[in-house]
Image 1 (cartoon, one colour):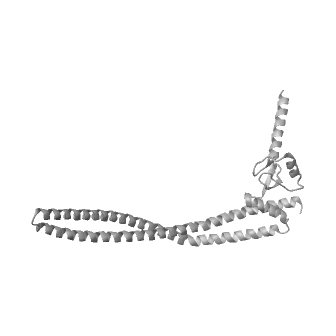
Image 2: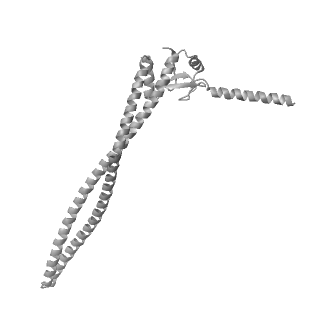
Image 3: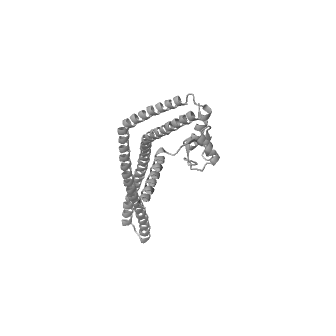
Length: 262
């Protein structure tokens, strides 16, 4: 295979690889989209379970505190009755201290109970919000699952066709050249670059003049000294040459007109 044919094959291969990369990116995006939502649903489900356990634990503690408050209230009633039966100041002082201690305990339990009620309410609000978010995401997954599955299958079929075309293109191509191209593409994202105006058009490094001359001759394939991409000569675009010719013609016409006027 001539150098010209090798370059033509590499150009086709590079364009095909760019298309394959774009398809793979779309495919990964579609798969990640549904995967992200499923992960969010799972995360919310775990959060809901933790909130339920927390609410159950706080309600259990609240019930214990309420029970202690009832017991303390009963003891308070008994202490008040004892106060009424006191026979001297010493007994009255002892019962008074007992009453103060029981009242203190009752107030503490009451305060703890009120705090727990507030925390339980907050947890239940968070629980309801998380459950609503989970249900909404689950509905979105169910709604989009069919569309996403169809899109994924379409992209997978397109990718398989492009990969098959790549294998066909590689048939009969120099294997050492393809290994070199694939090695650079794996590191750089592309394995081919145009050499134009004395530079590698991809990494924009200035090429040594002797190397650029040999690339222009097209008798051998060379790699960029910087990015290692395989280089091919890219002559100036015809449109640019036409523009220069038109500009030169306009300049000549202007000069002739000026001479005739003088």
